[in-house]
Length: 619
Image 1 (tube, one colour):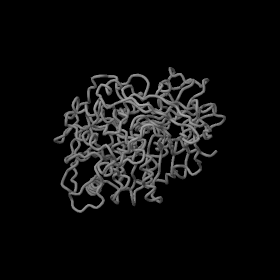
Image 2 (cartoon, rainbow, N blue to C red):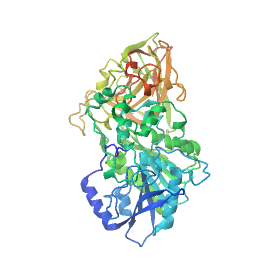
Image 3 (cartoon, rainbow, N blue to C red):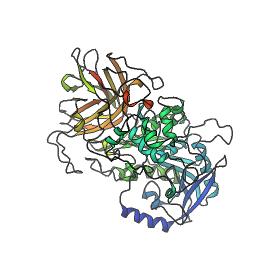
Image 4 (cartoon, rainbow, N blue to C red):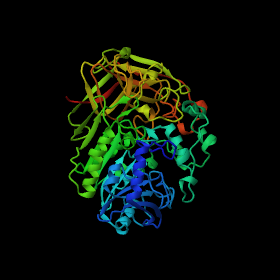
């Protein structure tokens, strides 16, 4: 999610740039506010910024959001408009709309409102129909438009962008879902492979989920949650079992939190909210944008692009993936992230060479943007690369095998009856990041993992220093052979780039010790009971060797000569994900006493190999 409502607002580049844009907006645009009627009679509050230069006709650039279209009042202007200042200066009719049931719009808000493909009456509404009705009204009622519209949005507004695609209005020519919310059980904000992402869900819904009985402006809306303990690791441990959240903090007021607690499997509630199955016969041009280091919705961008391709390979559907945090392509220059420098302003390059030309081509008839099928920034080598497909065709699958004594190699293990054994205690879970944080940071996605490697309940496997560069571009697949004394377990697999001891100092953070730095390239969790089915969980048989196989989101990273590849495996990632009691039960209604220690084994022998399948780019 974009954590505005939860009080974690990611600011823009600089206040001076916003001040300059603010003056330009007032000097060059007229703002009007309208309540646009939907087919069922509900009216959606919409702020419209129209260029004062009436000598041209302009396309619409639409952003539909649950995070307010502030500021309200026709004399109160936004400080900047559009995806970047390039759009502001070029001239568009900018449209911002409070979605149904949020802020000043009428109606009932429904989280990730299910799609209705076969609408039979005017009461059958969804986000696609609200978008269609909005565009239809705009084209007919706003003077000076050229009959074309584009939609863009990051995170939840990214979902509303995706939802514009099924049954799109004929005027909708270009859509850019950016870090779009896509599947809240399998991979985005609130679950990853069925594991509940506790910190984000609590932080977000403690404010965003508060009921809104009448249309209100933000000054009258809910305030951010005041965490009584400023160390998030200790705070979430103090809650105990998930069922205690309602008693201690939420009561019965947060509807979607209650929904989360009642739908612990991938049931019809979640399936109805999977927009991917509806992305068929897509007519507008699509530009899907994501960040490899997006803590919230790394899954969504990759899966939205893939769903459109799977349904129609001829759709005008492009993918961009950069080295960005959530929305970093819009809210930073993209030169660096965390302790890692990328040697160039990746966000600025994307805005100038991809995003702006894409919308100019489809909305204003400008020159063909000539975008590649997949425009991908490869970290490590720090290069933009264009591919004719994603994953790239010019790759081969290779397998990194765990070995005895913490070794890792591309050769299958030759040992017999070989395993690592250790104890996992849910009352002393592995933290997701070093240090003390009040709230989940975005930097954990790329941070140094040496703190975790020092724990006895984190198993580490590492190659020898590489003799030459190797680049992974595409999917990762964890293939674990494990056993536990419990009946359930979570598994976290992390792919890590280990810097040589003589690594150059960080250009970003002089305090970072880069010699031996363990940069997280990708980490992902799997709730073990869902290893065979997300619909029908299965218990582990204590002591029995069991296969746990799951996909990690795609990567694009070069491990440089002299660096090493590391894989870490652990059974908790707290408080990023909730704790697994290590017993097969309904975790959402577990008691404090249900959380028990378990002894785990990770096998690495001829019969029971553990590995990570990687997609290697051919030289």
